Length: 269
Image (tube, rainbow, N blue to C red; front, side):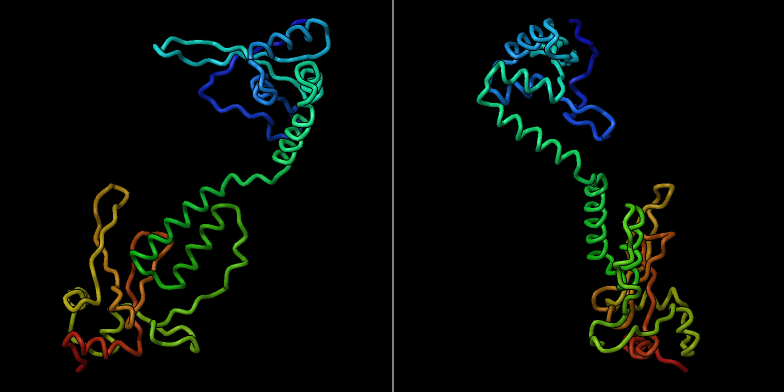
């Protein structure tokens, strides 16, 4: 009986069970040889004999690889159905029939298990977020925004996340809510402090409350931005925006801004 044939490249991974339930599950002659501890060429010879008698109906593949000096080499393999695999193993080594049953059950469970194609991607994104959090120290609300974005990007439901996060100074305790903040320009105006935002930021940097970091823009140019330091987190928080998640935007706590201004030598009129 003729054996149907097609060619595969050994550089591509082959799957013993197709992920679609509409595609017939198969087992390769190489796996049968490994399972029964027989030489692959002997297994192939038996399959060919059984196919000639019409007892099994394999499909053949030429799996290409290279030898030690780089010459292309084809290895003929056969793929058989579950039913045919029992016929073959019964001829080769009846004592391995139990192992064959176990193997098919394992493959069946593997095929039925829910696929998680994005699991590695999610882990990678969470690892990046952890590094980002450690380096830039974003406010809890910004971290929540990032987690929500990661969930949505990977088809996960973010509803298990809290609906809000409390943004407060580390020494504020757990009893209160978020502490109101404003951008520096607004606070300078509200408190009648005679300084530009740029000059005040340089003062904050000099006293260790701010630091300059850099990121690449779309043109691969380095762009500087301000980030509140560990010392400065008592007086403000680092915000991020979805449009520019790789840089922070310092906001300062309204109730503590005059104290901060006094520490850097600036007081209101």
